[in-house]
Length: 315
Image (tube, rainbow, N blue to C red; front, side, top):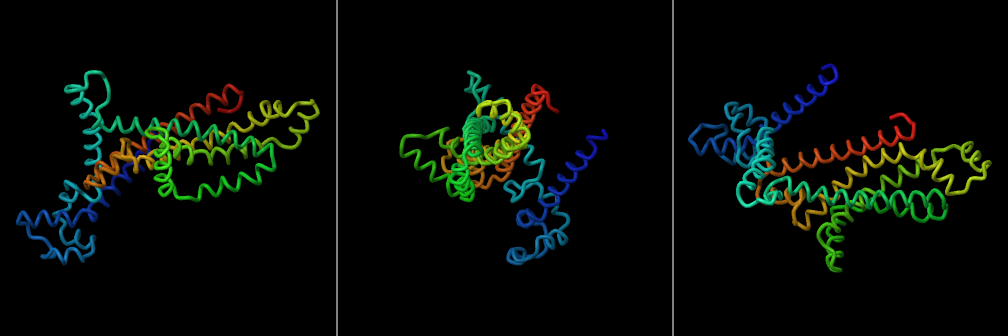
């Protein structure tokens, strides 16, 4: 309990802050609904309420606070509304689907699990492509001063381009050459994930000091032997640390890549929620994306502990 105590307190504080923030965000809609039902609210007119401060409206109408947590289309849904949306879209949709048309064991096309799987597939493929490209580029940079001076600046500049502006361009260009579906989203994920791997891997490959590299030369080791027996083992802690950042960036890239495509995925789910004012749906997709990111980072951490243990290092 001593370890879980601070976490529980922090989570409780976040939920309390969430509930508190939902009240001023939704108070105007709650007052409008109460007025339609004949309840006296302050101020009397909609124009005055529109121009009034949200906190002032809450203080003037404390009896409407519970209604602010029960709006059908709230600006900021309360935690229990998001939990209800998650239960409906993750659990109930799958149960109802299997009772109806889905006899083959596939996921419901209306459920959030299918959208999460679509996003996860693009994330995994993009992360693999980005990580492999980052490792290869880092090895080239470490062994070639020319590549370091010519390629590294462009790699840095590439990360200054907003991905929201770049993603539609990538999707359109690839669609024009017949590539659509998973690959365009994976390329966007790879674009975001390769740079952290490059930076971390370059730092790791250069971690051995001059004494260690001189010792390898004394043993007449080849460049390949120096790379595989000295530089790569020394780079593992740096590589796994950068991969944790890269896999989260890959997930963001997959979600952004789904916005212009609207062919399924958590990004398309968020966009559909924004179109129809279903903020609980948006928040449910956001929380599921955060959970996916946590699982992916934990998987990288598990792989790191296993690799370091096998290498004889501290896990």
